Image (cartoon, rainbow, N blue to C red):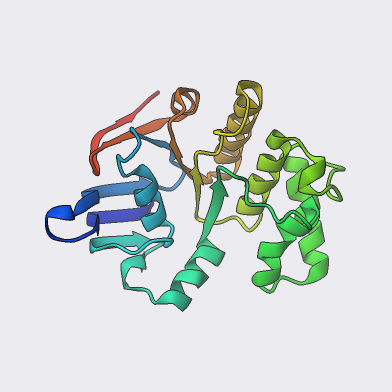
Amino acid sequence: MSVIVSCESLSKTYGADELQVHAVDAVNLQINKGDFISLSGPSGSGKTTLLNLIGGLDTATSGKITVDDKRVDKMNKSELADMRLNHIGFVFQAYNLIPVLSAYENIEFIMQLQGIPAENRRAKADAILEEVGLSGMGERRPSQMSGGQQQRVAVARAIVSRPSIVLADEPTANLDSHSSNDLLELMKQLNKEHNTTFVIATHDQQVIDFTQRRIHMLDGKIDMDEKTL
């Protein structure tokens, strides 16, 4: 199995002296191509911080982190921006769609930043909308879509350029159970069909039950890492 992410003694500390908080505390972790992972734990356990460190949205206090054989902890701001743009897909709790843009335009935005020609962008957007079950809805703006549909657009935007890994932070938190199940089925399908690696930070037992590798964090450390059949 090829390793997509490697963390070695990875730590993130906030504050100083007796006020120090070890949000991530000497974590060692390897994520393989095709993993479908839930990252769970109580509030303050460090799961979102770990997700942000992997995604280059936060910087480590110490330790080593590698994504696609590239040392994320050694990158400058420009290199981190390039890594996030070309290697990592993000799905957030609040969807983070641009409200004045259509579904097409939200999906095309990342590809535009990547320099993909306009005609190729539209073809890719059409194909990915069909894949996520939103064929014919490309002209709709976020306000004209349900929460579940908006999150599908967010997933489409995250995977349209086939990143090495997709990081999702509480993606079902604003959805009802039916929409959550539909979203999880979609991500699982993408995982199986394209071998897309997903890491999902969550409090939701429904999400945890869907994943084939379950990592639990407590007080900044991984206290459980198990695989299911």
